[in-house]
Length: 99
Image (tube, rainbow, N blue to C red):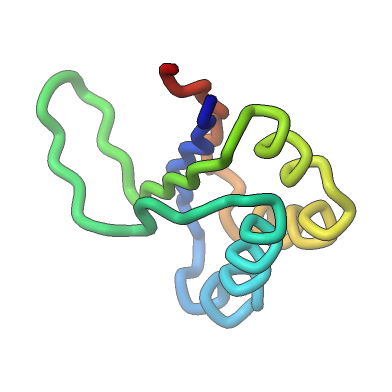
């Protein structure tokens, strides 16, 4: 069953974030674990509540095992500190899809 990484990425300095190499590394490392970007920084519209995401990212993986394998992999963890440093207030969750 598919699983989704959903993140609200809040870079302090968008240009530093873009030029860091993290974006390319995230795509490359996610793809090596079956991850496919479904949304990445597109326009959002709040329909209910007071949550106002700034930069949503959704990545689909074949399974929760694939998603967690990517997240904990050496190849991604090499880059995770870059994201955490440049976007320290980001939020990230893993969600299992429906069968």
